[in-house]
Amino acid sequence: MSLKMHRDIVESIERGDAGELGMGDAFNFECDDRCMGRCCNTIKIMLDPWDVEVMARHLGMTGKDFLEKYCEIEEDPYTKWPYVKLFDAERGPCAFMLEGGRCAVYPARSRNCRTYPVGRAVRFTPDGGKEEKYFMVEKQSFCFGHGSARQWTLKEWLDDAGSLEYYNRSDIYFELIDYVSGVLESRRWMNERIARMIMPFLYGPEVLRAKMGIPVEDVGHEEFYIRRIKALKVFLAELAAGFGFGPLVKDDEGEREDFNLMDRVKGILVTEEDS
Image (cartoon, rainbow, N blue to C red):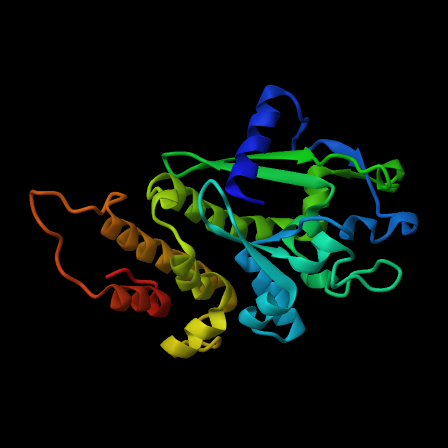
């Protein structure tokens, strides 16, 4: 889901067009064999970096190979940010859908697949906080799940799906996009070349580990993900300043101290310290 889609959903909820769910609110839902797999067919399934990393590891693939085999990259028209989506799912059956509609990567399924029919939108505040909204996504005509007698509270549903870990990871990513698009004005300078430069930070942890000599034994997957996003934020802030955007733009009163940006990025990836 793109940043603009997030904003549109939040605004829709605030207008009262979509019902908001609280953690204690209950709803009925359970997947039904009669429609199994239909929701995985001809649908746009957006993936964030943590989705790709978990699915790729589950399949024994690198993030780069996973993108090349299963994904397509598109540019968000508002932010110029590169987003990833599952290629086959948008044009027909999802590549991971087995006969009978079951999912071949179910334990590692993406955040959006994991939480359906519950949706979530998040908005980041200037003070570093965030506001999150949960809602039921639009009911599909073919779905029998809503007619189930199985009842859940929102918290039970999220806990059962293991969703909160995925939300925490995706929030780190979307907060970065919010910063890059809002503060750094990425739509003014982001281009295809820069998008290619940031892909290893987002979807190629194996590439960065190899270049920096950071084995999984020293820095686990979750921690390295956090460091990659932090390093990318530093990298893009400096890059934006070179184009004349963002808080690091030099003014006439003086120059910032010289430093090697890549050494600074490496320091964050290796030790999490920003020198």
